[in-house]
Image (cartoon, rainbow, N blue to C red):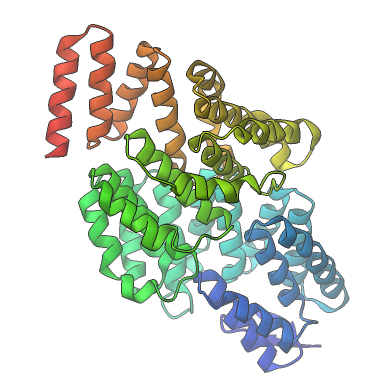
Length: 462
């Protein structure tokens, strides 16, 4: 093994230049959510299976796919990456091996810390940056998610390959932290530089969602679709999901369902993100009284087989959401499994299942069974901890909508009105929220407030 330099000037232990080029191609595909990522991984491993970073990248990708059989395969890649890095790797490669080993052991915080150690010494390591971005996001650490990218920005210039992707990560971290103006500025600049970067398109889509700029959002997703839709892997379905959300808020339900069939769930995969997109979208439609036909049952068949997977709480909760939406009794069994996982485990996710995801699952299952009072009782105490399950504000919003609906159906009108007052303050362009506030005010006998809310709903709908 010899020392080479990759396209960003970082030392790499590999057999030859061809192996380094294969690693560069893999990193580019991984960071760019490219549909050839799996092919690039195979090419890198074929070019040099003894390269520590090739084995580490393999383990990372298996974990990020969040499927139990692949997580089990990641263990072998982690062991091999550690062996190779200790035998011949450089300091950066040894830190990558340590990060992967921590992830494999379920210590996500330690894994993220190792990645941040890499970035202090090697801020151009875009793979480490993307992995830290992912872990901070799924651990619900908004400040770290934002600041991780800020720390490396001085080391990045437009001359470095991947600069646009770094801007896109910066944009998304800022958006989740609520700095929408800066997020939009970084995101739009990233897309100008690289229209194929679906993550940057998605970052701006989040800004438009959070600010209630739904008509702009529809146009934004469509604007450069030809550039990214054929390049991105299944993450493209998530970008189309954002467009569907805009249509739902605009009460263009036929357009949303068409997107569900043609884009969001065009491929009935078992991927956790794909299922989460579909489940959250169907529940949003259900909460608005839209008949989704047999789509619930088809999705539920896939989710029922996921029982016992427990790789990401975020995914598991969407499996329960699907079963609840389909009004299937398995939702309770699935929820009880998540509670048991929290009681039995000791790693990062076990604590999340115990403190947050377990109660949420019980509440979602109760909602599906029509026990709305129990749903409120389970969901309300943990609502400010939902960030621990991972995902974005936009993704987790479906749980807030479900809680509000459960409160109303349980006849807890004071709570429903309070939650809706909060929601209309955050989302003043939501006609649905204003209508629900009007209904809650009516139920409490406050006709003046009800009339004002109905007027706002009409203004938003217009």
